[in-house]
Amino acid sequence: QVQLVESGGGLAQPGGSLRLSCATSGFTFSNYAMNWYRQAPGMERELVAHINTRTGSTNYADSVKVRFTISRDNAKNTVYLQMNSLKPEDTAVYYCNANRWPSNNYWGQGTQVTVSS
Image 1 (tube, rainbow, N blue to C red):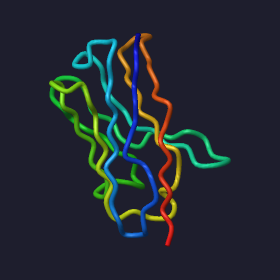
Image 2: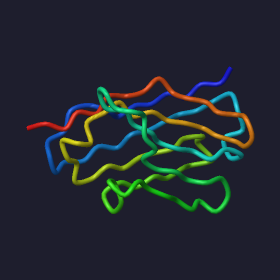
Image 3: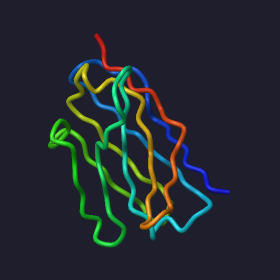
Image 4: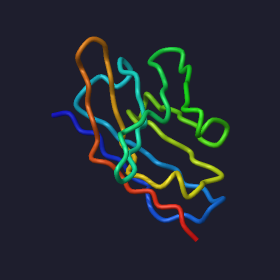
């Protein structure tokens, strides 16, 4: 059974930091690209960060570049999102995603991140 379980969300002040984790099971983690998406109320889900399978190369949405860092630990089957210099506009539900071309695509249940003073 495939599981992706996010944790680490919560309330942060502007300028603060949070670290999200996504623990996975039920599939060969090292064979999957891993992504973090987010969805704010009334908005479409958007890709925030991507890390590939072998080289660990990463890509980020322009809105989070420099501030967010995605990483993975293939030994622990876990992907992380370090979020620094948080802004109110980062408030959203953050989702972990595992993807392997052409058709394997798995989602976590999401974790709420709220940035507010």
